[in-house]
Length: 355
Image (cartoon, rainbow, N blue to C red; front, side, top):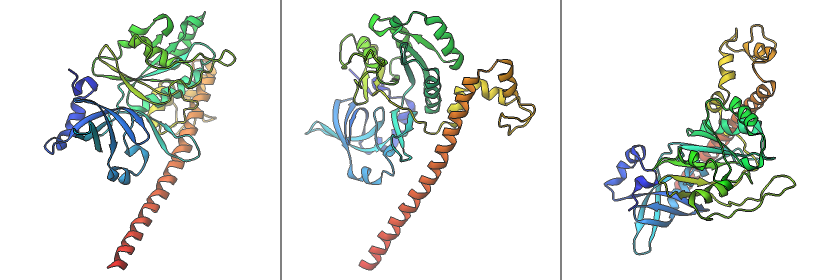
């Protein structure tokens, strides 16, 4: 008998749901999203659902609407075997990126995740700088990151690569895995306890769907061969899906991401580059830019070789990207607020004339 706790329900969500209890609402968790249609995990089984028109109308942006992993407030339409979503409970964590395109808009990739598994292939997909970028977003999300180096069967020199990764992923667990050979699966499962949620994130072709199929013991998710010419696979997962594992935990599969543009990241970059942050505390000047200033501990570390130059260049690049995004976000928010008040005034004016 599955309960809400089976799907990740805990005291955090229960406390926020309390006001809805007396009104007769139920709770459900989004397992699958397809545009405005959803599949929910509930105590009454899986239910198809859609949001109310009011919820759609009042949403100021897409992140005000449910995504996979969210807990929602519902009423069940028993005669139809469906549900209506009335509200969205606060998120405990969210993995966000800037949406693709020119608009400065947040895209929530996963919500209410306890552990983010950052999957990299030990083939042509391996890239330390990409791993650093993923770590910034993972730390920013509020979930705990774990690095998964998949396709160990295709790599002859694993230990030097592990050491390189551990040097940039300070304190983050690193799992060496070969999903096709069942290597590392038990270690990955040890991070997904009963009632907790993990998410697999990574670029296309790193083997996320293969990992889930082996954890489930059957081929539930479609997989395709990776092209030998460039180590890239086609997007075998076309939508996000929350999957209940036989062990009792939940795991989300996500489509491969061709790019991961940052969204926020001020706190995430401090955690991902903790070594540089600690060095910066030792600089003579508190506002040191780590350039030609005297007494710069970062520059000293670069000179004596204790800080890798490529890592510092990656840190500076990501900082500039975050600063640029923050400036664009502030400008976009200002324009949206002006547009909102313009609509409010227009509505008041229309009502006044009607009276």
